[in-house]
Figure 1 (cartoon, rainbow, N blue to C red):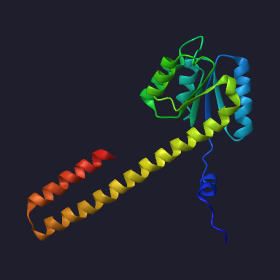
Figure 2 (figure 1 turned 135 degrees about the vertical axis):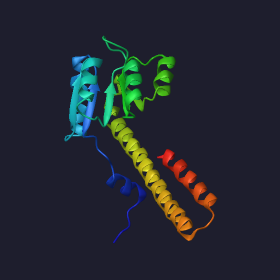
Figure 3 (figure 1 turned 120 degrees about the vertical axis):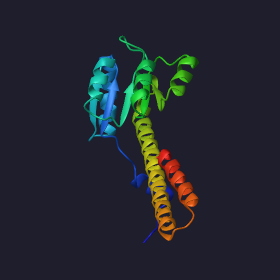
Figure 4 (figure 1 turned 60 degrees about the vertical axis):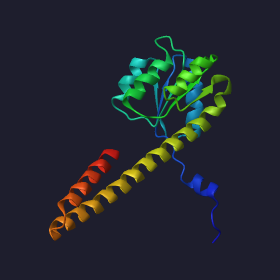
Length: 189
Protein backbone atom coordinates (compact mmCIF):
# COMPACT_ATOMS: atom_id res chain seq x y z
CA UNK A 1 0.00 0.00 0.00
CA UNK A 2 1.37 3.39 -1.06
CA UNK A 3 1.92 5.90 1.77
CA UNK A 4 0.14 9.23 1.59
CA UNK A 5 2.05 12.49 1.45
CA UNK A 6 1.49 15.24 4.02
CA UNK A 7 -0.48 17.18 1.42
CA UNK A 8 -2.78 14.21 0.72
CA UNK A 9 -3.37 13.70 4.45
CA UNK A 10 -4.17 17.40 4.79
CA UNK A 11 -6.68 17.19 1.95
CA UNK A 12 -8.32 14.17 3.57
CA UNK A 13 -8.90 16.18 6.75
CA UNK A 14 -10.30 19.38 5.20
CA UNK A 15 -13.11 20.96 7.16
CA UNK A 16 -15.93 22.42 5.12
CA UNK A 17 -18.14 25.13 6.56
CA UNK A 18 -21.73 24.17 7.33
CA UNK A 19 -23.06 27.61 8.33
CA UNK A 20 -21.77 30.60 6.40
CA UNK A 21 -23.05 34.01 7.44
CA UNK A 22 -22.89 36.81 4.87
CA UNK A 23 -23.46 40.49 5.66
CA UNK A 24 -23.70 42.73 2.60
CA UNK A 25 -26.27 45.31 1.57
CA UNK A 26 -25.67 45.08 -2.18
CA UNK A 27 -28.09 42.54 -3.75
CA UNK A 28 -25.84 41.96 -6.79
CA UNK A 29 -22.82 41.25 -4.59
CA UNK A 30 -24.90 38.95 -2.39
CA UNK A 31 -26.01 36.97 -5.41
CA UNK A 32 -22.45 36.63 -6.73
CA UNK A 33 -21.01 35.69 -3.32
CA UNK A 34 -23.79 33.17 -2.73
CA UNK A 35 -23.28 31.57 -6.15
CA UNK A 36 -19.53 31.20 -5.64
CA UNK A 37 -19.91 29.74 -2.15
CA UNK A 38 -22.71 27.35 -3.10
CA UNK A 39 -20.60 26.04 -5.96
CA UNK A 40 -17.64 25.37 -3.64
CA UNK A 41 -19.62 24.35 -0.53
CA UNK A 42 -22.90 22.87 -1.83
CA UNK A 43 -23.97 21.47 1.55
CA UNK A 44 -23.41 24.73 3.41
CA UNK A 45 -26.29 26.77 4.75
CA UNK A 46 -25.89 30.41 3.68
CA UNK A 47 -27.47 32.85 6.13
CA UNK A 48 -27.71 36.22 4.43
CA UNK A 49 -28.16 39.53 6.22
CA UNK A 50 -28.32 43.03 4.85
CA UNK A 51 -27.95 44.78 8.22
CA UNK A 52 -25.96 44.29 11.39
CA UNK A 53 -29.21 43.88 13.31
CA UNK A 54 -30.28 40.97 11.07
CA UNK A 55 -26.86 39.34 11.46
CA UNK A 56 -26.94 39.62 15.25
CA UNK A 57 -30.42 38.13 15.35
CA UNK A 58 -29.33 35.15 13.26
CA UNK A 59 -26.28 34.69 15.48
CA UNK A 60 -28.64 34.14 18.39
CA UNK A 61 -30.09 30.98 16.83
CA UNK A 62 -27.32 29.51 14.64
CA UNK A 63 -23.59 29.19 15.30
CA UNK A 64 -21.61 30.22 12.22
CA UNK A 65 -18.49 28.50 10.93
CA UNK A 66 -17.48 31.77 9.30
CA UNK A 67 -18.78 35.30 8.79
CA UNK A 68 -18.20 37.18 5.54
CA UNK A 69 -18.85 40.90 5.79
CA UNK A 70 -18.65 43.94 3.54
CA UNK A 71 -16.55 46.71 5.03
CA UNK A 72 -18.76 49.64 4.07
CA UNK A 73 -22.43 49.09 4.71
CA UNK A 74 -25.19 51.69 4.57
CA UNK A 75 -26.31 50.87 8.11
CA UNK A 76 -22.86 50.61 9.75
CA UNK A 77 -19.16 50.02 9.35
CA UNK A 78 -17.91 46.43 8.97
CA UNK A 79 -15.21 47.09 11.55
CA UNK A 80 -17.92 47.82 14.15
CA UNK A 81 -19.51 44.48 13.28
CA UNK A 82 -16.16 42.71 13.72
CA UNK A 83 -15.53 44.35 17.09
CA UNK A 84 -18.97 43.33 18.38
CA UNK A 85 -18.47 39.77 17.12
CA UNK A 86 -15.05 39.55 18.79
CA UNK A 87 -16.61 40.52 22.13
CA UNK A 88 -18.69 37.33 21.94
CA UNK A 89 -16.85 34.84 19.78
CA UNK A 90 -13.67 33.88 17.96
CA UNK A 91 -15.59 32.75 14.85
CA UNK A 92 -13.56 33.27 11.65
CA UNK A 93 -14.40 36.62 10.05
CA UNK A 94 -13.50 37.69 6.52
CA UNK A 95 -14.07 41.05 4.90
CA UNK A 96 -15.20 40.82 1.28
CA UNK A 97 -15.14 44.38 0.09
CA UNK A 98 -14.16 46.90 -2.51
CA UNK A 99 -13.62 49.53 0.17
CA UNK A 100 -10.36 48.53 1.85
CA UNK A 101 -8.26 51.04 -0.01
CA UNK A 102 -6.99 52.69 3.14
CA UNK A 103 -4.03 51.04 4.92
CA UNK A 104 -5.34 52.23 8.31
CA UNK A 105 -8.64 50.43 7.73
CA UNK A 106 -6.80 47.27 6.78
CA UNK A 107 -4.51 47.39 9.82
CA UNK A 108 -7.46 48.18 12.13
CA UNK A 109 -9.28 45.15 10.71
CA UNK A 110 -6.35 42.86 11.34
CA UNK A 111 -5.69 44.26 14.82
CA UNK A 112 -9.34 43.74 15.74
CA UNK A 113 -9.30 40.10 14.74
CA UNK A 114 -10.28 39.78 11.09
CA UNK A 115 -9.19 36.40 9.74
CA UNK A 116 -8.64 37.81 6.27
CA UNK A 117 -10.08 39.82 3.45
CA UNK A 118 -10.88 39.46 -0.23
CA UNK A 119 -11.35 42.41 -2.53
CA UNK A 120 -14.48 42.22 -4.64
CA UNK A 121 -12.27 42.72 -7.70
CA UNK A 122 -10.79 39.31 -6.77
CA UNK A 123 -14.11 37.76 -5.72
CA UNK A 124 -13.22 34.39 -7.27
CA UNK A 125 -10.63 34.00 -4.49
CA UNK A 126 -13.34 34.05 -1.82
CA UNK A 127 -14.15 30.30 -1.69
CA UNK A 128 -10.45 29.44 -1.37
CA UNK A 129 -10.01 32.03 1.40
CA UNK A 130 -13.09 30.70 3.22
CA UNK A 131 -11.71 27.14 3.08
CA UNK A 132 -8.29 28.21 4.33
CA UNK A 133 -9.65 30.32 7.18
CA UNK A 134 -12.14 27.67 8.35
CA UNK A 135 -9.44 24.99 8.33
CA UNK A 136 -6.95 27.20 10.18
CA UNK A 137 -9.60 27.92 12.82
CA UNK A 138 -10.40 24.19 13.14
CA UNK A 139 -6.69 23.47 13.70
CA UNK A 140 -6.55 26.10 16.48
CA UNK A 141 -9.65 24.64 18.14
CA UNK A 142 -8.18 21.12 17.97
CA UNK A 143 -4.87 22.34 19.41
CA UNK A 144 -6.72 24.05 22.25
CA UNK A 145 -8.72 20.87 22.95
CA UNK A 146 -5.54 18.76 22.87
CA UNK A 147 -3.88 21.16 25.31
CA UNK A 148 -6.89 21.02 27.63
CA UNK A 149 -6.89 17.20 27.53
CA UNK A 150 -3.17 17.17 28.34
CA UNK A 151 -3.67 19.59 31.23
CA UNK A 152 -6.54 17.45 32.55
CA UNK A 153 -4.37 14.33 32.40
CA UNK A 154 -1.54 16.03 34.29
CA UNK A 155 -4.03 17.34 36.85
CA UNK A 156 -5.47 13.83 37.31
CA UNK A 157 -2.00 12.33 37.85
CA UNK A 158 -1.13 15.02 40.38
CA UNK A 159 -4.39 14.40 42.26
CA UNK A 160 -3.52 10.71 42.48
CA UNK A 161 -0.03 11.59 43.74
CA UNK A 162 -1.53 13.97 46.29
CA UNK A 163 -3.89 11.25 47.54
CA UNK A 164 -0.99 8.77 47.77
CA UNK A 165 1.00 11.27 49.84
CA UNK A 166 -1.94 11.91 52.18
CA UNK A 167 -2.74 8.18 52.57
CA UNK A 168 0.90 7.34 53.23
CA UNK A 169 1.02 10.00 55.94
CA UNK A 170 3.85 11.85 54.27
CA UNK A 171 4.60 15.56 54.61
CA UNK A 172 1.37 17.58 54.12
CA UNK A 173 3.34 20.52 52.70
CA UNK A 174 4.07 18.42 49.59
CA UNK A 175 0.38 17.61 49.23
CA UNK A 176 -0.44 21.32 49.61
CA UNK A 177 2.08 22.21 46.90
CA UNK A 178 0.54 19.62 44.58
CA UNK A 179 -2.91 21.05 45.35
CA UNK A 180 -1.63 24.49 44.31
CA UNK A 181 -0.18 23.09 41.07
CA UNK A 182 -3.51 21.43 40.27
CA UNK A 183 -5.28 24.74 40.87
CA UNK A 184 -2.80 26.52 38.57
CA UNK A 185 -3.35 23.90 35.87
CA UNK A 186 -7.12 24.26 36.11
CA UNK A 187 -6.76 27.98 35.41
CA UNK A 188 -4.94 27.18 32.14
CA UNK A 189 -7.96 25.30 30.74
